[in-house]
Length: 245
Ligand SMILES: [Zn+2]
Image (cartoon, rainbow, N blue to C red; front, side, top):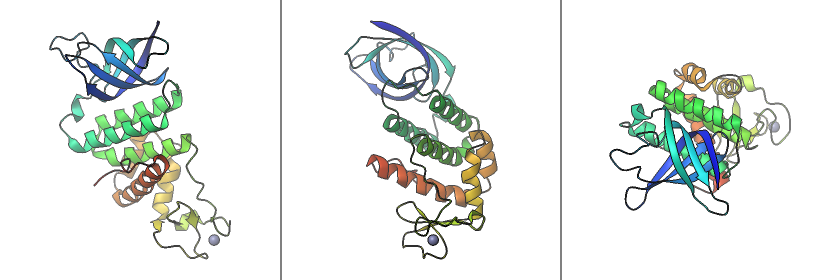
């Protein structure tokens, strides 16, 4: 039996019999872990609200080799998710991001960069809920980038010439960029120059400043959310990772 302690973001919880619950958490040091929290549903549980979905907590857990589920021993709240509890849009967006993490982060594979990016995105949404859509776009672009699936849209996929991004981009249904000379295929997205700027600003900005910059630009945010959501759906074979509504 090995004992661990790590900062964690609670991604999902499932009720079990009695007062127990399965908690799926994304830990800084061990990646995605599934564990049982005994007695968590009791009124005076030792876990308090530290295992509520979307909170960030320092979790101690034990894990036996060859056993699927870890056992959560203790949890100390670092950041509550109380502020999003009543807002269905925020809950849906955070749940969408949690599903993407489970899809893209293999169990027990630590990824410090992914952890910091995710924690910063969750913080940004909880601090300024109005920017949740742009934070979602920021998150999706980083996920695609870290997983090696973010296309290079600077060259036309047909003639290979560099696309003048300042004039905007055409993206076809296979998520490739097509220049003005090669005619865009049906089902194309038009990325205005301002959307192309948003894409490059993800690389240098925090989710908070990205969201502040994108706040006036709902049209480009919606286009990018649509493209990235469909890319994630296509990659995972699921139809549930794009932002609804
Ligand atoms: Zn071309």
